[in-house]
Image (cartoon, rainbow, N blue to C red):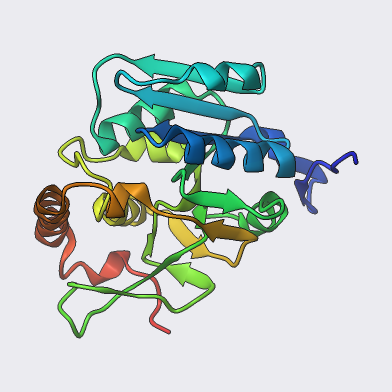
Length: 244
């Protein structure tokens, strides 16, 4: 069955602002190849978006070659931390929009029509899961309030205006993803961008990046990321979305 490519038009000028082909889906291969391949297949089966993969360090990636030319592969011999990979993606990908997506996320259908319809003036990021910083908890937690404008988006699936995100950049100090996505989100808001959470036809399988890493490493770097976030942003109410 031929899939209809999604676009969003500015009615005032009747010009196409975003096409599905303008959104590159990016993935980071950090092991667990079979699950990773399932994620790639789901993207291919449910969308027309190009795919860009960073093979993060020495590991088997030969099966990915079968997906060319739909898939581009960037092989990094030395393993990079999460933010350095994100900054590499923002630099190397050429499309106007970029999807940062964890391999645990699965497309159940095409998410891009809903993503595209959500972008408007001032919106620089649209994601599947996110929330509002809990002010009563002194910024130490995030409350998921459902669809709407949010303070932060989670790295399971977020589509960003690439040029805006590149100008802001992810903090290179963040080696591990957890809470680094929150810091990056607040940096985007500090720069004047709006973030929106929407319901999308996605599901999450086992999150190897959380469950299958050394727990001491996970907690150490998660804490360091959040402490840096608090030091930089806590108390800056002007960057937050309206409470709801």
